[in-house]
Image 1 (cartoon, helix red, strand yellow):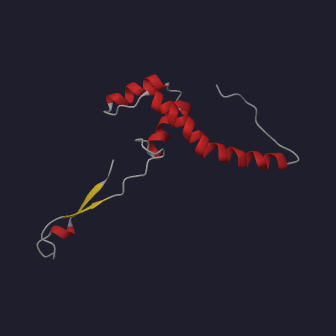
Image 2 (cartoon, helix red, strand yellow; image 1 turned 120 degrees about the vertical axis):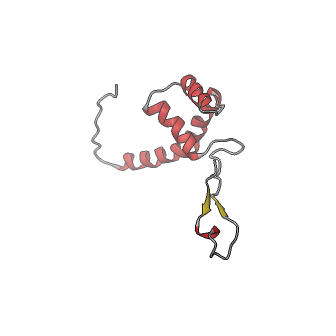
Image 3 (cartoon, helix red, strand yellow; image 1 turned 45 degrees about the vertical axis):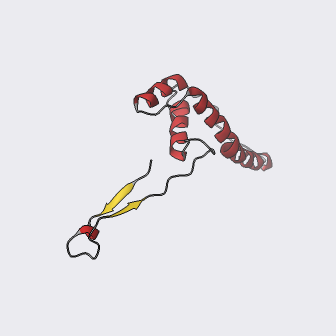
Length: 112
């Protein structure tokens, strides 16, 4: 989705421009090439799945009701690929720091 804005001052009678000036925002680059995955869309799918506990089949129906055809397979593929590309390197850096520590403190309370 691209934001488009019109300059109100540019179309006034005392302005040099006699026609409205429209400014278009850049289209966000897809997270994965040749897909409709934007950073915000992938983040929303991950949020619904892992924070809200919403299964892909229910997400698929919700997206369809909003006018977006987004399959369960696509969402699963996005999460796997984005995890491999973006989250695994972060995990590896954190792990490198952990193994250099002499003492680790942790809260092992289960999330229910």
